[in-house]
Length: 260
Image 1: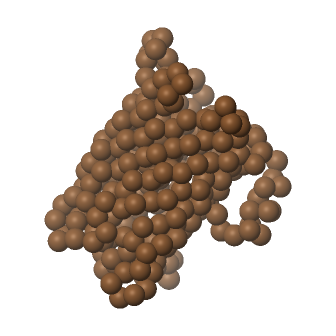
Image 2: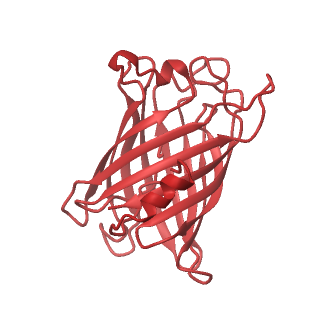
């Protein structure tokens, strides 16, 4: 999941001082995008999802925190590829256990994509990818695969449409029934009329599992290589859960993106 990026003001101040080159991120707010890290570039993402609603027990649900690295591995301009690794803290002691060198919080992702106009002039971008491939069978192996197409329309912005599916034993609804697939939709646009540093986006992941959500927000580029997304996440099924946790209260997210 693309699927995460601020650990605090001090950390941000340090990271903003790093001199790196601009590259396009590989997600929207919540869902994957057709964007790919350029060959030999590296992307650092630090994401923070803070719950904004109380649960039935009167406490805020656990947040989600993700530190991820993604690198571009294809030298070809028309067929691009990236791979990545995430340290993902889900707020669940079973999922996040790393004692005795358990690697539960480690997840892998990858993507192959063809940019717009690659197949022919006017062709949409096409991407096929996977994420949340964990190392603990029956616990973190969500194994989500997806496909996306995207087209930039003058004035309107970019529209993306896709579909995903994953492990039916883990992506479930509140009754434990399989809810492991759904639509991927998004709109995003650089708001150059206001500032070339401003970007707006709305995205949606279908499904009654814990990943299903509507997300909207904006990004501000503090430099040519560092930007931060500020967004709000409204979950489709607040009663959905992963393992023993019921944590699907809506959340506010900050996502720090740095491109090397």
